[in-house]
Image 1 (cartoon, rainbow over the protein chains, first blue to last red):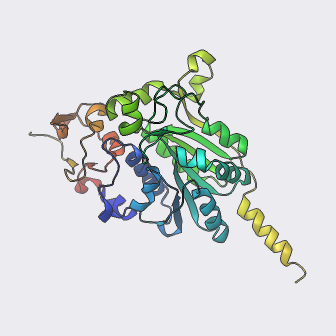
Image 2: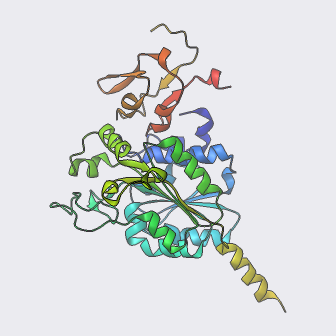
Length: 272
Length: 70
């Protein structure tokens, strides 16, 4: 590891537990590099996770970290941010953790526009519990619990976040890593609820169940099906089927929840 | 291999899990596989784009020795 980055890791815990070719390591590295590029104060950052392969990430990171219960990372993070609005709060979560059991926390955190950066390690499957399909498993894909193919339609997490009220929404992939680091930097600088849908690979479960081959083949697949939003505008619905749209989808400035809450405290104390 | 380049690419054997991502996606084919393990075979071609380092899931690669980073 590069010397300048060592301070951000609990290096004694490395090598990490993730499988060979699991891109959660790439994503964790991207988060750290974005923080380093922005020269954020390490002591003013709290990283929160739920349960799942993705949620192991904060265990390796040398910040204030909190490993919480399944799906509840955003609920805990909301409490942390309200109690200490000066902290930069980052949630690292998986597609199952965020979109299934944590789905309700997700839409309401977005609705409140609370200043939390949520980075979803989206590998389309529940890896830790051996490959059940998640709300992000593409329709037709195979999983341990979908041996005949998944009949559920998957969420578009970016559309979901935007319609729920998130004020920064973007998607990147582990193949397009320089772009993803830039997106995470923007999300970290954004005041309000920011979502980064980070498309990841799970060679062990999603890869094997869908006969996708090696981690390299899965990375090639992501490379080949990804389309920048701008190029996608010119394509028909048929041409876009099965494609991953990447880039920044939405950005707006809107009142932030902890600031609004501070006003409530001030108002309630008037006349004391 | 004798190289004109002053920097080096270091690979940490302890953390490398031999996923092959660095070997496959190097734009200049700097790496070769030795039973799955990446070895630097063409340092002269390296442009220090660092994509291998950024894409290594195990933080096992550092492009450029510490001396030329300072």
